[in-house]
Image (cartoon, rainbow, N blue to C red; front, side, top):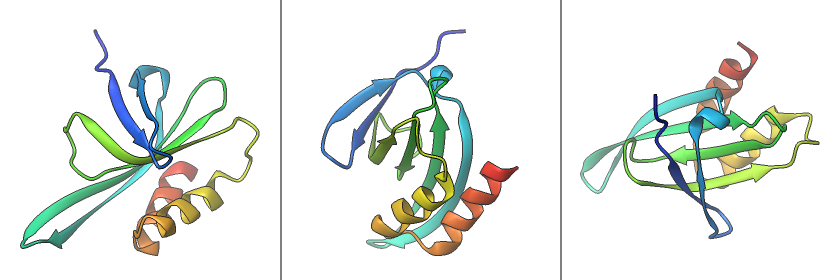
Amino acid sequence: MVSRIMTIRLSSGLKIELDPSDWPEIGSACRTSVRHGGYVAEKLIVRRHEDGRTLIYIDADPGADILVQGDIFPPRIREIESYVFRFSESHGLPEWVAEKCVESIRG
């Protein structure tokens, strides 16, 4: 099976490409909101590479080519939950979305 390469624009503006099979999803949470008279599905996703790096991003248009608003954290971070809360807050997501994402990480 061939993996689809994802393109993610980090909060810094840097655009990266990654293979999702190298970055398995370890947690996520979804919400639907109304913007400009229409519904927008947003998914907060956390992925971890086997080398320990962690990617947190928001897919505000599932299935689109470029995903925006993401950050990569180094392998040395231990408390990923606090990064999920800070990332969510800085990107205007409600606290309950971060809570659901952290719950899914904990399993």
